[in-house]
Image (cartoon, rainbow, N blue to C red):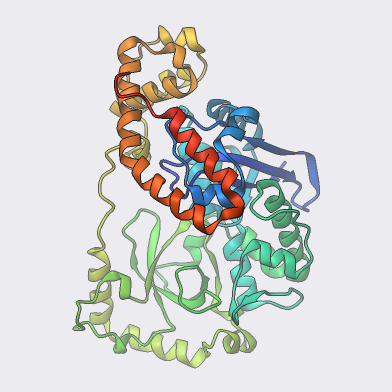
Length: 454
């Protein structure tokens, strides 16, 4: 039976490759948004090699010391995610989770020898992101909901939406409180705009997206994304080419007249300047047929149907412009290859021969790991195993492994500590009322820095 699991994270920073989950919270509901069981809410122990962002700690109020005192280990966290949270037929739901929270989940599972992908698709599982659903609702069918603004501009921050609509939220940036607010917002959208809500829910899988965003029979469609310039982050888009990534399509923003693009501008035009976006089918994009763009929505978005039709006609007429756009986009630089194993998740799938060994790793305790010497075919896994042992089962390390780990931590601190000290000095002046948190982070760094002669 399908269930929803609304979840949120508080993290040590913004980079899912190197930062860590410090708090995890979630509430399971039926598809009718009725709670099932008890809420999940716990801290996750931070390992000593991690230097959190002080800004992140100031927002959440969670210190590394709190995670050690009251948290569970990261490998236990990974087990709970796989066995108790993201169970079969679960729809994982968050607010900006596709771009943020889900990435932390994947990298957590990767570091702890669990499959980083199955939790979101296998055995009836799926995911959904309410941020773009909220954006599209605001743009197309805003009636019945109070929409916050800041300095006259539309904003879709969860805490502001909760406050504007009197949705319970005890404390913003506490994971469980944010989950409660998200469920309240979901109920509100479902109640006030059920037709749009149900349409977007049923459209969230990549096969349904591919049918709407169809290069074989391209048609303009409505699309909400933070990438778009209009305050409501919604436009009319048109498919123009396959994307650079598998399962994606390059789309053109029909808000813009293609004949007005100056390809000879100085400095030279790059992909950043273009009115195009790569739509990925597996990221639950908030899209709908162009027919939902009624007159009220056209006026609200400052996007009359005539402008859409005129710009589409020009785009279709000038194939040379489309070719130029695609060529410039194709030159978009790739991220440089990751040099650290924990950032190499997307370098390739783990081969089948290594899967039994991976499963064995997560079943072993300290003694078992000390005597376990797998012949991994994937070189990444040997490095991951050493770090997993060092963080989760340090007693399993050999003398040589301990020296390798200590050297790694020392080099990491030497690279990161000067920046942290500078930032702490700055924040001490601007946040005098939060000195305790800053001092705790300073003490954390001092206590975990390996001695030079160690």
